[in-house]
Length: 297
Image 1 (spheres, one colour):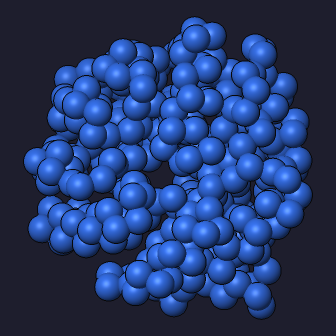
Image 2 (tube, helix red, strand yellow):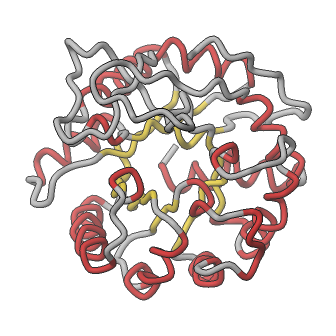
């Protein structure tokens, strides 16, 4: 559902503000989905995301390979090339199999890939041994390229892997607040370990997709956790929309073969939630300075 209304932000965005988490889903006949997908998304084009960004004032983006796309990064690569031809600034985070040849990694780097993603949550992977093996293997490849590693997982998994994460040879980016539960407060399992990793400088947090965890529309319930993360190390905070907003619908089985509709999220409202938690100086840091450093803008 790409006709969601996007409010204009209630504060001025700094130049070169970056949305660090979007997905592009192109036509199936050109970009087939992975056999092991857990859902089949509808189409979300480059033009659609640019229209949303122009509406809310975003000038840079990071395209993230989504789980239904598996290891085939063709849609991400073509999107990066198209954006470069338009004069738009963009980077990407890819997914590759273990043992990928350095030549392919260099090809990905040339078009704008700057990280590798290990998506544990979308596949329900919570076994710490298997998760650690996947993270270490991906980090080894990322280290060859001076990239970072990105993971989508829960605080419980982070608590079990904090020593592994601390020892990685590359920075680690954790998606969507580590799926912290606003109702569980600052003492919930895993949040202390995540905050320690953020303080150490090893881990970046994406203050992205608050709609996945909040119960109050204005995000007030998530503010204590958001502020704890920002205060732990503002230089390790990032922001993103998570456009076009995939995810299960209550009471509806995931659609593997059709076109599962997206959630109609107002991304201007999401940006205003972030703005309510932060000062102008912090917004400059999180929207511009930190992504420029991590992604090489």
